[in-house]
Image (cartoon, rainbow, N blue to C red; front, side, top):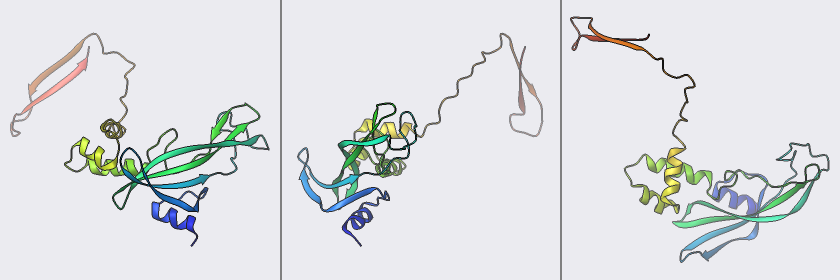
Length: 187
């Protein structure tokens, strides 16, 4: 098993395009906190442009690198950061650039999907949101945002209510407690 495969297994990362070299792991002090930091590289040959969806027939060229930090779940009770050098690509067709996509986090997000899943699991326990935020090294606002992501989207009714509503209560059955029913209709 190579060092890159071992590191992926340790961090539970399934992305085949992400590679780690031998000196990828080190401890570092970030904001007065000791953290585990893993350095990796993400590159591949994209099939199409992210913006114009033009097929890659030698129109997408490598255009440098961008270093991205992603918060992972704790390893041995240490805050764990994944620093990825992501390949940047430029489309000759539309002239725009885009970054290589990874399977660890969502686009434009520095928190791994696994951390969000762990926050959701902790939200089912009787813990305060600020405690969950401290445990997962995120802000309480992020915990609230993750909780709200579960909320179903509100359905807007395009039709207004009718001008006249008719409703009535009436006694319907003797044997049922309450024994009252309700009828409603639009007039």
